[in-house]
Image 1: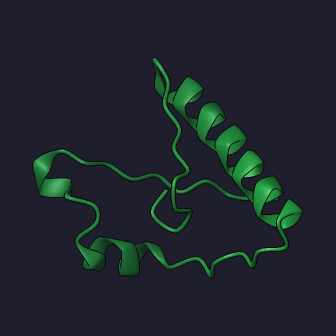
Image 2: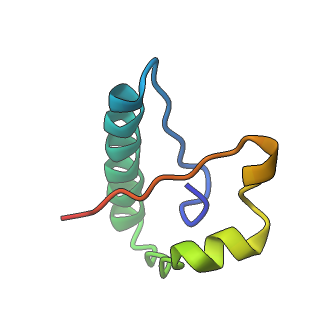
Amino acid sequence: MPDLAGCHGAGANPAEAIADAASAMREWAEARIAKHLPMPNPRTVANLLQSGEIDSAGGDSAVTVRHR
């Protein structure tokens, strides 16, 4: 999760990976709130793809997860 430094998710299949990523994001945000740290502004998918952080030609992939 490029905009959430140190936050990662993984799984044996896509559903597990998304569930783990959602859990990791929640825990990451809770830790930031507990430390009174600001939340970063999210970048758009277009900005992320242009940043070079995701190497789609090299096999990297990206998904968006809607937050509630």
